[in-house]
Amino acid sequence: MKKMNKIVLTGAPSSGKSSALDAIAVLKLEHIVLVPESAVVLLKGGFPAPSHDDNEQIRAFQSSILTVQENLEDICARKNPQASHMILDRAKLDGAAFWPPGIEDYLKNFPVRIDEELKKYDHVLFLELPKKEHFGGVHQSRFHNFEQSLESERRLEKVWGAHPNFTRIAAHQDFDKKIQSIMDTLKKLGAL
Image 1 (tube, rainbow, N blue to C red):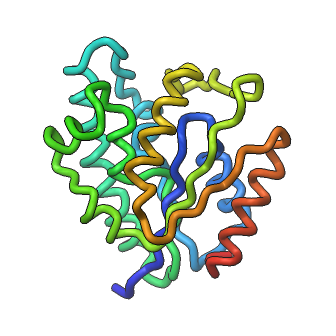
Image 2 (image 1 turned 120 degrees about the vertical axis):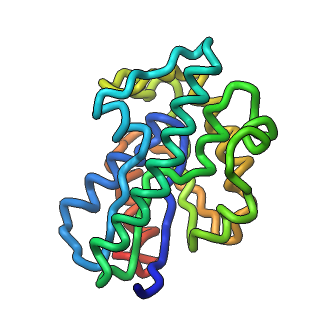
């Protein structure tokens, strides 16, 4: 299997990752493999959303996400050996943003190492969270409010910010402009 250029879309809930993947999917480009967000795959499949105040439920959910993420990336690559680019809606490091005890505790309790994860991906697009008045936090499989999303954004920037090819995509009041900014960035990276 040839090496694919891997691009991670990351950001807090409601930052536009899934919408960006949907916009790319419409283009039906054979050289691009799209990897959906593991947490959403689990939640849409019936996995119960963990309670925010129960770390054991969150631990079970995070462990499941890690397994699904690893296997999703592998299967998506194997099913599309001709593809030159893989665009992911989150990756394993994102779990650090959703583990209540914090990043360091996440790295101690789960089989994830920052240095190894940063090396797996060629580019990271960090999508900024919209301002509170433009926050679309009511989503069928979403259970984070604005304050929780803001905290996850801080943590995501901390874990991914060390990546040598980290690009910030600014929030826009007009969501279509943000999607266009993502598409323009992907064009510059040679993905589109």
